[in-house]
Length: 156
Ligand SMILES: [Cu+2]
Image 1 (spheres, rainbow, N blue to C red):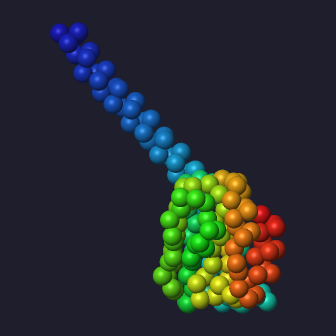
Image 2: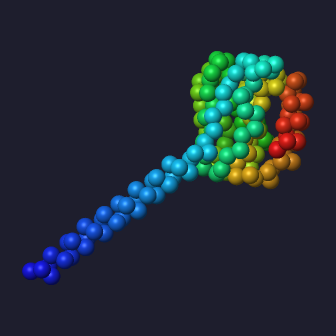
Image 3: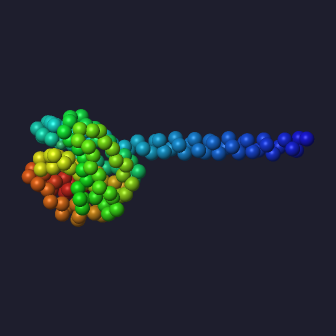
């Protein structure tokens, strides 16, 4: 009799063990996303007009960047040729919060579509990978963004 009872007991013990493993890995993945970043879309920051609150953001692979539409009229658009190979187009709606989960390492250059010639540009560096820096340096910026881009790219 007792021997027959042993099997179900160990079966349930194993389920508890497996559940604990799943629970602990879930906890780990929550803490691993602590490097997520939030960038605000602003009309003014100090002496600057039309800016992202952080122009350069460094994240790990798998992290998400959130862009907050603090002031309306802005968006986020990845610049053609300014993102790692294999990354799809990304252009968010005007005046809306948006987010992007970065899965491919490298530099991501982006701008706000209406203000791309007014210096409203930004960069996300994923996984510390700068292998596409030469391509990013070749981006043709307009107006006020030219000088700002040059300084930012040299600081990456
Ligand atoms: Cu803008």
